Length: 204
View 1 (cartoon, helix red, strand yellow):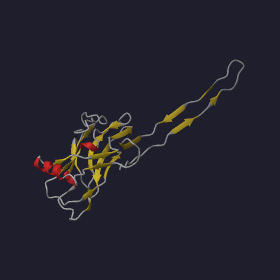
View 2 (cartoon, helix red, strand yellow):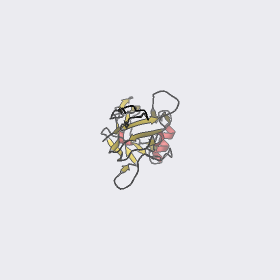
View 3 (cartoon, one colour):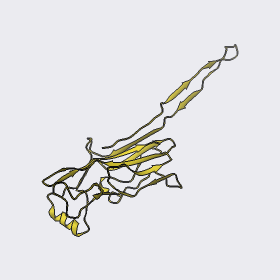
View 4 (spheres, one colour):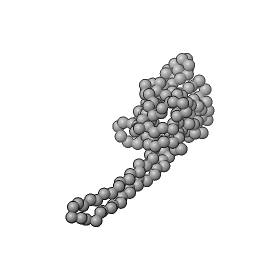
């Protein structure tokens, strides 16, 4: 799921014409053309294979050995499936402060327990760690821009990137669904936990 807040200024095309009085020697006509290019910004989750469904899945419900191995090795699980989430890109035309935020809905739990033991903060993003993607949307120079290299999910919006410069077209924020990981410690109730994560762009 993706959401973008977009503000644009309408394209204006101004035409005027001036024609001189015809003479026996020459005739001329001229007019100025003024074009105002709108400010534009957009955010999108890139994915192949068509459709609108995007997901990151940690399906260890039928793979207890992998779950136990993760517990023994530090308690980190990697996604078992990622659908239509190969990159997050932004496109900003114009100058002004823009920011990218992320927020998640509370877990919806389905199972025999109470849904205890797993928190949103147990889901972590490490930019480019598994995907190898590199962000090229933000210029880091003085105070012109910055971005977080890692964050955990939360219900409150978190700013993970900001810049004062345009991007010069669609550019990557440097992460995808494979860069998520899940921390477990063995006290999680069995069942299915679902959250919706939204990335959105604001300007200014």
